[in-house]
Length: 312
Ligand SMILES: Nc1nc2c(ncn2[C@@H]2O[C@H](COP(=O)(O)OP(=O)(O)OP(=O)(O)O)[C@@H](O)[C@H]2O)c(=O)[nH]1
Ligand SMILES: [Mg+2]
Ligand SMILES: [Zn+2]
Image 1 (tube, helix red, strand yellow):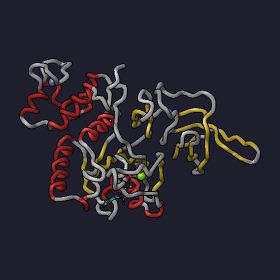
Image 2 (image 1 turned 30 degrees about the horizontal axis):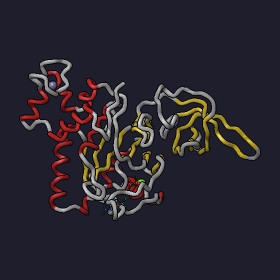
Image 3 (image 1 turned 120 degrees about the vertical axis):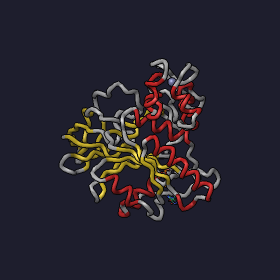
Image 4 (image 1 turned 90 degrees about the vertical axis):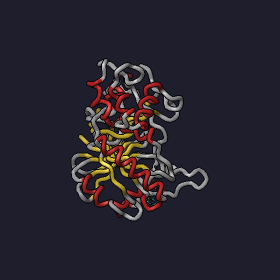
């Protein structure tokens, strides 16, 4: 039978078959893993082939093959830094939820996420959530970031998942597509799913008062079929976002505004660091490229301690 993985807990996979029924499946034997060294060979969104096996009076599915992934979002495993974890695959788009407070989202995190998505051409929409909680200064900061990222080509929207403000606009963008919600723990991903589909009653939790961070309430990625012809994957909060298996020369190409300027750099293999007549550096000096974006780029290229860039 053919199906799509809706949930993965590590050893069990919930698969929706083509006939619409859900089956609990395990993996057995060898199948192509497409050369990715990941902690999870099968991810939410994967198209799989499985057979039913009856042991006693219990029927379970056994996954024997995975279909080729159109794309995927990958991050480094928290504990095993050399291994990677596929968060979800076969996505039409990703909504990255950003909050300026409780928790705080830094631009370096946003930029790393965008690079990962750009590598697979997955469109990203930035959702600035919890607009009801911000001071005047923070609201100004949101406006600044929206201007910055929309100029580069990313759709940006201010929302309030809790009250439901602008959630209808998110819904419109989701029609007919498989989307994923991403962001730090506590930014409101599950709250937003609940606002879109109140019947789901996903678990949400207050930010920890002590650490002003989310509490990792959602522990596994899970896909839901929504009543308005859309599928959403709710994911656990991600802390850091190490980029995986990327050549140094490649990273700049995933900053769309750098990529556009690249042809004007003196050297066609310009890394936009100390090379003479670099169009990106010139644009930076003229405030046509944002310093925060350039800083993120240099961090990714040189590999900051907490998020090491991995040499192949
Ligand atoms: N004031 C306000 N609170 C919000 C908003 N959206 C979400 N919250 C609150 O933020 C807290 C965290 O929300 P969750 O939906 O659990 O966050 P999450 O992103 O799913 O977190 P993890 O599952 O841990 O990754 C909850 O207390 C929500 O009620 C909003 O727009 N305004
Ligand atoms: Mg959640
Ligand atoms: Zn350059």
